[in-house]
Amino acid sequence: MFTERILKRVEPIWASYLEHPFVKGLGDGSLEKEKFQFWLKQDYVYLIDYAKLMAIGSAKAPDLRVMGIFSKLLHGTLFMEMDLHRSYAKQFGISESESEATEAASVNTAYTSYMLNHAQRGGAEHVTACLLACAWSYNYIGNHLAEQDGALDDNNPYRDWIETYSGEAFTELMNDAIALMDELAEGMPERVLADLEEIIVKTSYYEYMFWEMCEFKAHWDIPVK
Image (cartoon, rainbow, N blue to C red):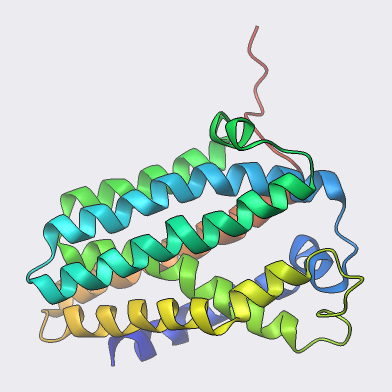
């Protein structure tokens, strides 16, 4: 399977997420409120562009069945992930209009632009490669955090985050994305497979950069005069 080949490349990158202070703070509940608020707003506008990937995938799908898979992924993003964000935002004093009006930070802009560029230029298989690392690595993180002592205790303010990304509903969406990637990669020439692999590796690096961005609340580092 193509994704088995991919996992060998990206798992060392994903393992570094588990050692990142932002992710560790989610697991033990020590993450500063301001950093999580920054993540909430940045990830919300990220998910708006991420959802566009699924819409592009539906348009490029080779048949109705694949179109339906992209539609399911789109629905999960809009009405599961973004509902989690809206719920958390309310708890942390962030209005929905404030979330939607958030200016994407530099790393966020670079990441979504990279994905949308490759999705628009390529086929359904490229769209799937673009969206895979985010869903797969969040499930990877969620599962690891859920196994930690105290991570799912009531006194962890980020328990819902861990439960969402380790839960059955998100795991099902992630498995759909993996299965779709394997299906669309089947029979592709090595040149195309190498392109798809590069996209997944690069987006995995972008995921690390996103955690870094939120840890340091980095926006656009050069001040505008």
